[in-house]
Image (cartoon, rainbow, N blue to C red; front, top):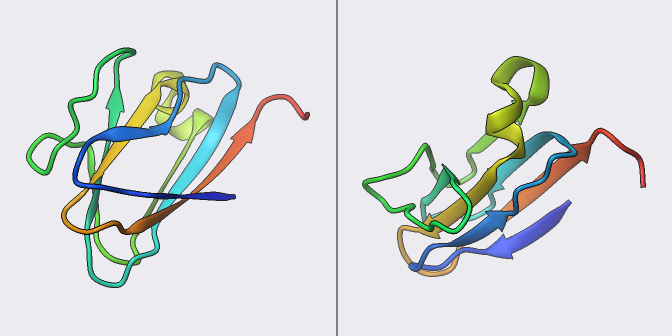
Amino acid sequence: MSTKLAAVGAAELVPQNASRKSFVFQNEDTADTIYVKKERPGNLSVSATDHDYKLFPGASIALNYLNDGEEAIQERWTFIASANTPRIAVTETEIFKR
């Protein structure tokens, strides 16, 4: 598991990865919301009005290859904070062991 700080400017949460099998994103903050979005390569368009998931404080989203599809899991995901610099936890699994 890794953690990242969100900001009020869009940033890459996880890069595109053809080996990714599942992931969990969890907002570790107690006050601020984090917005996440599946992106096309080279495009950062996540915002508070254009996002796929809105993670309230303490909320999480889990997606996996079998239930949610290859594209959703393996594409690039970006994120942005509603305010301040909340921390988001990221856990990923891959098809191959390293």
